[in-house]
Every structure is written in C-alpha cells, then in structure tokens.
Image (cartoon, rainbow, N blue to C red; front, side, top):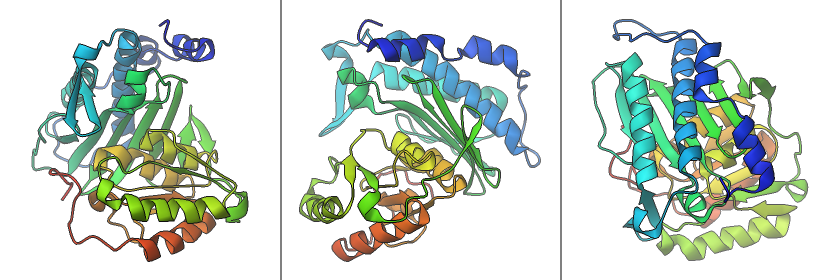
Length: 312
C-alpha cells in the first residue's frame, strides 16, 4: 500500500480484519424472512459485510490503472473495485437473508417483495479512491417497511466503523457518539459537496456556499457524503449540505447522524431527502440555520428522485 500516507497505512494495517471480526462474533446463519428480525442481527450482518468489502478495498488500493476506470456519466466514475466490492456485500447479505431486497449503486435492484431492503454504496468516494486520497467508505443501511432501522459506515483508510440502530444511539468503534454542541453558525464548521451531477444548479449552489461561508467558521469538502454525515454525528462537523445525492450515498449516514442527536432533512426541512437528493444535516441549531438559508435559495423540486432507482 505504497500509495497511502504512513499514518493511514498504520490505521489500515491495524484495523480489525474480516477474519478477526468473524472470530469475535457468532456466525450468522441464513434466515428466511417469515417474522420480524432483531435489529442486532441486521447490524451484525451489515458490519460483517462492511469489513469484508473494506478488506478488498485495502487490497486493491494500489492496483488501479487508468484502463480500469470508466465514466458512467460526466464526472461520475466506476471501477472494477466498485462492482467487486458490491458483489462481496450483496453475496454476504443474501447468504444470511436470502429473502431480502437490495438497492445498490452499481447493479440492478433486487425486489424480493418483503419488508426488508438493504441500501448499499460499495465505495463512497470513488474519485478519492482513484486519486489515492484516503477518504472513502463502505456504506450499508437496511430498512424495514421503508423505515431505516440500521446503518453501518466503514471509513476504510482510518479504521473507523460508525454504526447505529434506530432508537439505540450511534457509535464509533463501539463507543457512543453525539453531535457537536456548538449552536452559533459563526463558530461552526460546515461540510458540503459540489453538485457535479447537477451543474445546472451551480449558480444557486454558489450563492448558498457564499452566504454560509460568510457566516460560519470554516467549510470542508471531503468527497464522500457518508463520511460527511458521520462527521456530523461525532461532532467533527457542525453541519453538512449537498444536492444531487442518491439513496445509497446517505441512507446509513443519515440514520447515524440522527441517532447521534442530529437533524437530517431536505433543504426545506422535510423528510424526503432519500428520494430528492437534497440533504442537510447538523445539530438542531445549525440545521435550522442551514435550512433557513437553503430554502430561500432553492426551489423545491417536483421530481421524486434524482436517480432512476429511487426507494419508493
């Protein structure tokens, strides 16, 4: 892993491997869906899948060549690593829960018709991964009757595993986390993502960026929305906003931020962010400040989804 900074290499080489993880937890046997599944069992399978995919991402980190990179759409990249990581995750989930539905970034949705659906981003931050910028993640969420109940985000390069279960709080490497207590935007650090998939919104985005930038303490662009949301959850960022996101970008991170005491909505303070792709998160005070700014600058979209899969 010559392409990683020495500190990052330390984190990667010392993070729990899938093998070590599997020895630390009971094996999950396949379960046919015929009753409610304990959320703890769902999170166990999600964690196992994230570690398996993370181990593969580590192995491939220095192996990518230009010929391995394709462009799905302008500035939207995919590699064999994305698709292989996705297969690892889906195979592990369906090995435990063969009757569950799957919504994932790189493959066709699997609609099994039951109560449970897994929402997967096998490599959030593909451009960072390609450029050897060590901020990328595996993001896995599961919904029950369309309500998120468990989420896992693995920051592969830094060995940080964020997870949450609805009503049970949020955790970083199994330690409880909570959002920042800073309530004034002038003291806040805000994360954002550039609208590279929605360049027609650039003028309005830049207006929002300018107003927020003029009022806050600082702004950061990490390049992986799942990590942005987790950084809100553990207080590294006071807030975050981005548009043009897909459900797999945010489903797990939004649950983690919410369970850490944060507020997550669309730009207009409503709950449809998984379908609209307009996402704002923060501790309650900063979230309120951000939605006030964003709602006046952006017109609420009429379309129900920013991608052709959606979650409906």
